[in-house]
Length: 234
Length: 299
Image (cartoon, rainbow over all chains, first blue to last red; front, top):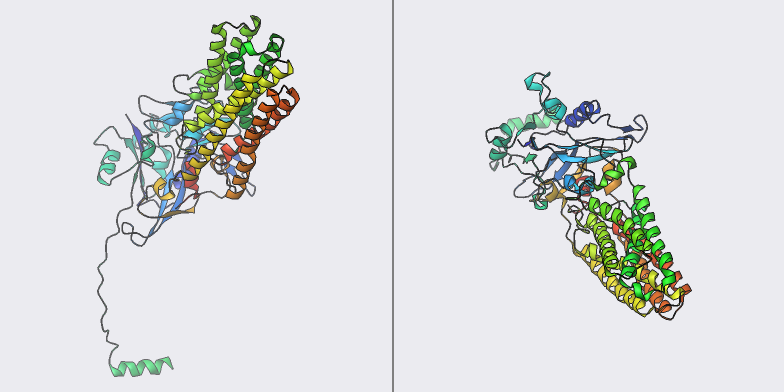
């Protein structure tokens, strides 16, 4: 199995719902609590597994008119995960059975090297716990048999109001994630680094071209209408 | 990258200590026997001090002992194992009173230099930091380590009226090569094309810029990876640190060549300061890809 997410950049509206749901679930989940520093002061700060950024893309032949793209980023659960390779303690590991990358909180020494090795900013040090924390793909939800089957999905996926996030197994060619990636030309970020990120992004669809006609000479109505208009304006 | 003093001090101090051990192993017969123990102890103190300082960087030091667990993949793990091997090797060598037997000397020479190599590889192996991901990184670390170690060795030799010719010559050669290596490194940083924000987000067909970072305050990511200083100030550090290192080590080599341990000692300290500045710059100038997702970098 190769579990991961498909994120549709066409329909994401940047509502931060996924980031908030992630924070809520994981704060009480296996890696929680996710520390919040100065939560009621002017400069609150804390650990988040999922952050949504917004970018403006300029107009080009491929993106006529330019566009705003909301860009959720979390762990890509890379096939060739550098964060796991560099970890000296063995705290960072990738599960053979489903490809989820996790941190063993009992082994981590908080050296930050895995965060340095990750180009996606998927790992954040919890300064209070002194250990590295990261997206678990809600491993404690997706296998929880006490939950109804439809709810055995990551919190970000369940909460997304525009269904921009889909969770599934990329090894199964018939899964929705595989189908969407195939049909919509999904891509992983920064393929040139060779980490083979599992999560895929679906590029925004091309906006349909609306046909326009030259207006030509538009009649301004008859002279009576003109005269009435003048009268009214006064 | 945010420069952190504990790491800067660790790489410089351990670099000196391991360099000194490597030169000591290489040039054992050159050193008057009475100076062997102080030199070996100095190498161990510098290395140990550096390693202790590196622990200060850990958020959870009680798990530091686990750092030896992943020798097969992690350079940090390899470094930890070699560093752990270094101390018993040195202690054994001291117990046998600095024997000139090739076995001890070769083992310590290899262990010391490989440890420096592993330290450098921790940084060199990181693909998201283009400035580091290049063989020049480990070449620079090893050459600076040998320059510092060579100069220290020459000072110990001079203070015991030994023959400093080889050590001074070695220091001179290493200092010049290290200077050239560092200039090449600086040129590479200038030439390395940054990955653009557009490419990092997959919108390579047009320019892209950040509208909203999604958070109002600083985060772990911005603290750790976004360290921006004016280019002019960074250049100034280059112009101060590199000449300081190279000139002080050359001056030190000439002092020790003429038998002046005091002059050499002052130069060792100056070079140490220069190296601290150079290491600070090594971090300050390195740019991590994550900064692109925070809108820092070419569109």
